[in-house]
Length: 486
Ligand code: BG6
View 1: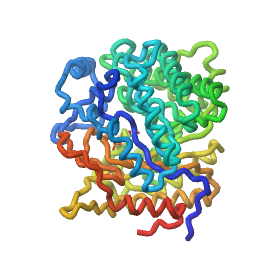
View 2 (view 1 turned 135 degrees about the vertical axis):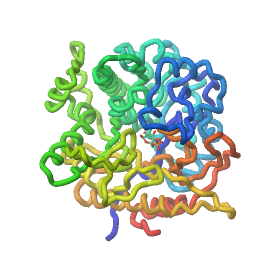
View 3 (view 1 turned 135 degrees about the horizontal axis):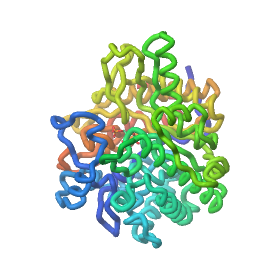
């Protein structure tokens, strides 16, 4: 079949500041929540929860710890100093869009100042100017898994309502500064992550909190309000802005045709879309009430919150999609797989990546169709890709055929979804240049079209090398997605 994508389809790639920039303490930047996450060697890893959580004591130790080598996100891949070279490579591939995030502590080092850090603002001016040189559209996430660490020690992150005002001030600053340089914005990366990993998603230390769900849902409410107020402010600053929300969208299948399994999968898929229900439709969905009651959660709202959510809905819905998983009511089914931010049951029909994530291109079509039916607003795939342990061959090549296959199959399913009637704005595959993993802080888990010479310990020249997938993606973009051959 011929794959058809709209003329103005935004082809490109995505990264996050905390996983690429490095320069963690340069030009006035404050310490971020990503800078205090320690590398954990594979033999010491017990669970994903262990990797993603943070205690007060661990945080205190990390803040004092000057041993930079232990904290990979402090060094990233040195995008801070090499962005020109990296952007030139993206341009060579033909990128139309580059998704990046702004580091909150580069702009407000502690998060609660009233005056922003000029050097931080200037850095992103330079990055956006560089992108403009090549006609690459920036897609900017305002908060991607980091905040000034001071907001954790002082306020316990998004548990505190005070963060709403601080975030809106930060959003206002970047909207105003980049009013004419950036059109596409996302407020929070994978906002639903707050429910699974409260430190990563919301800067919350849970130490001894009696009802973790209570804390997480309250934090999420604060993020919803902050996001909606940012949307409001953004539209006042530049009515041309397109502001979206961003969701981690994992698809859940019923293990069997047992009605209990089907019901369970339906409930979990609803929960996976709880945040977009609020941000796209503008109100809390009715199904959430029972869930909150069952978990003894009461969300404290201020007068006016409901109107703020209703009146400031997002323009488009973006999401990450890596994999699907399976649920069952039968407790004897225990074969598990790893996954993005949560593990799940094994699907016998699917293969897995080197990191145990189940590969399911058809699932992308399923979620695209489902979300299109549900919301009727434009969708944007802003993360998708294969984390793999690539090998640099003696002849200097990286033969990542497995990645090409993964990407081609997912792009093909996007084309099918478009043919099914889905309105899709673009595709920004994850980690277009190798970067530090969000969950494991490894360098070894690579997603890029561009190889970066660095290992988990930070050794290497940081040289950028084109992988085979680089040339393949260049061809895909040049053909407008019609040539996916490999
Ligand atoms: C998403 C995040 O959850 O998945 C990214 O938005 C992250 O920041 C990506 O890097 C892949 O996950 P990981 O754990 O393989 O880096």
